[in-house]
Length: 220
Length: 216
Image (cartoon, rainbow over all chains, first blue to last red; front, side, top):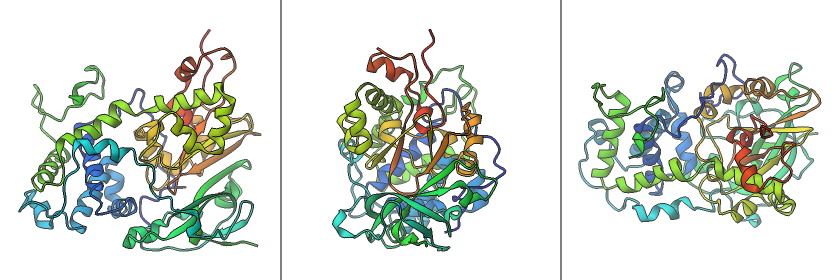
């Protein structure tokens, strides 16, 4: 979706503001929000792409006026209701009408195993033959899906060169929609700064975007 | 527990609990507390597991891991080769594996190429080697500007690159996680891996800083 999350190339944000000796969390509620997201994610009722898509629905004005973990809180509340873990009534009352059926909270002993995950979105190479190879010129599609996509607006309808084939990964677009794991080659595509931003871009600047094969077509 | 461990004179000292000054809880603090209670009552979360998750990323996993990877690459040419050929496997040799680092790519800076990593769409970041991202990495200015004005952003961080240096911005739009291998500074010959690791900053592994030679 053409959401507010898709920030690449916007002007007007002002300087980047690094904080010296920044703590990992600034507030206790940030710690809890982070952990609640992970712990409920481990229940397996949604995947990471559904999680991102949920956050992308935050109304733009609200997204810009809130901090990062407030985005996580918004996405979590949305998913809890959407996936039936909590009813809308329970959420608005903040009161449980009963125990969740068929789900067990992850315990402290489950945590190390959950965090030592070694396979996420990668799929077996044999599941899809690559359409492109390093050095091929490609053009990204001019698409504006209302669903989830990982092709940023600034990199649509642009010509680039395949830098490398990362292998086969779950296509996020369909994964967010239905949970189906569609295998797709994912490529690092190199775009020259001037292709993306015009003549004012630095002549020796390039942006590499990881593009799933369905986002690409051959360029002459 | 962990919510009291910052310096008390630190301007970012925050405590959500009503303290001696009786500061009221904000809406978001109240909301998160209520949500945690709701999920506990539903049997969907266990607060001890939440504590363990927080503790992992607050005290155990952080940029020190990445610094060890970089230092080893500087000190051990065979490791450097493995790291550039199969980053995930080489990083796993040091035991750094897991969530948000399942598929790693290391980008080597050279005198002619400077790499910098961003996630314009959200906040993708290599947790096992760098921990959780700092606020600026997740914020509008960095996400908006790095792809369109990388040299301007780098200048704000104090990195001034010559015109003949190529800048490569890596937008983490998929599930690959990027770690920059900064250039080894001059004057570090003969240093041990441990000493080298002390020089490597988080920002240098994101690509918004260079590693400085130790003061003599």
